[in-house]
Image (tube, rainbow over all chains, first blue to last red; front, side, top):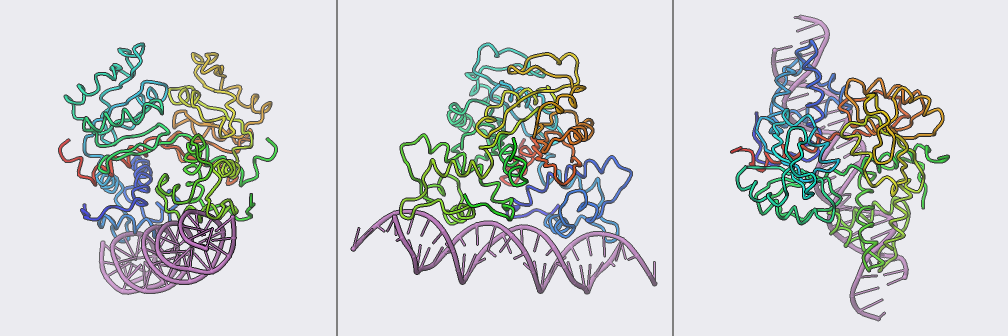
Amino acid sequence: MAKHKTKIPQIIIRRLPVYYKILKQLKSSSKDYVSSQDLAKLTGFSSSLIRKDLSYFGTFGRKSYGYDICCLFNQIGQIMGFDKQKNLIIIGAGHLGRALAYNRGYQERGYNLKAVFDKNSKLIGEKINNLKVRDINDLEKYLGNTPILVAALTIDNNAAQKITDRLIAAGIKAIWNFTNVSLKTPAEVLVEDQIINQGLCHLSCKLKQNDCLEFH
Amino acid sequence: MAKHKTKIPQIIIRRLPVYYKILKQLKSSSKDYVSSQDLAKLTGFSSSLIRKDLSYFGTFGRKSYGYDICCLFNQIGQIMGFDKQKNLIIIGAGHLGRALAYNRGYQERGYNLKAVFDKNSKLIGEKINNLKVRDINDLEKYLGNTPILVAALTIDNNAAQKITDRLIAAGIKAIWNFTNVSLKTPAEVLVEDQIINQGLCHLSCKLKQNDCLEFH
DNA sequence: TAGATTGTTAATCGATTAACAATC
DNA sequence: TAGATTGTTAATCGATTAACAATC
């Protein structure tokens, strides 16, 4: 796989999971190769764009055959770093934290869910998907003993920045942020905002444009 | 508010919720006006882009003052259709469906959560956030009696397309899709894919670029 | 071979930024 | 008034598409 000194454009990063998902489906089909035209039909992107995206990382295709499905799947997995193990914790054992604890899809992407934390003493000790809920007061102690890269934040908005500061002080490298707070972090700490309600905003906006909102 | 015959570009639609969120925060501050420069600092977009975006919908600003915070907040809410009531149901009372049932943020955007459905007889009748879980077999009957615009889909992948077909046959106009399936729908039915694991993909990709994955 | 399909270049399209007249 | 800030135009930048030589 070609290594790049320059950063991968954000816009390509956003398409990689789409390719990955389609290729995963194709893996269980009888075909070995897929052309950029086939991928265009399945992704909605143009075949030209797909070839351009893929050529950004190296030359994966075989002229007149297309792309080896398994090979490309693995390559894209590697480009996204799925072959590297990443330990993950969840902060907040509420409804959303709980749903995340049951999320499938960690392993496939190289994530290991290691712990769930909460401040509510009624929840501490409870088992969620075989993980004991830990006391948030033990956060620093835990992080001192276990190398954790990523923390999912599913807590109240008003506690978000405080916990973020503690996580960063304890060496966390990335935050998967489900709160509505725009977290302040040093440049080297990654934040991925996962705003659930954004989907509702987009739908509302598009429903309005389709004139579906007039008589409701 | 200026009405447009042409569609709002997707890229602007994606920024509207960001403006909305920031303006909501500003509303509870002591200021009445906000300049495009202030908004630039808060959103990360350039002031030029912000003025351009807003001018797309009309002229909201006041030269030398900036934008009236409350007025702009309401305008953007209207542009996104938040002033119109939209009934919503959730299909699937698993961990994710449950989390969605407890989601705050519906009302503010004009959504009313009306019902939760599941196929599991053990769950049917249970109360989730004051909503009784209904039998999926009663879906058509229910939709025949109650006008519902949007359905959130939090069910198994292998049931997703089948339920989608039933929802569309019963008149649903938009699907908030939490499954991993690329749903096939008629052009006039909106689908908003909310792929939870996409955030994990992006984080992994960026961690790799920051060389955080080497020794884990 | 003839047909298919890649990888890449050049052309096009669209989005962002810079700049500034208008004006509060 | 002088300073601030919008709304808008023109310039720039970046992303997508079209086209095609290379080649399997």
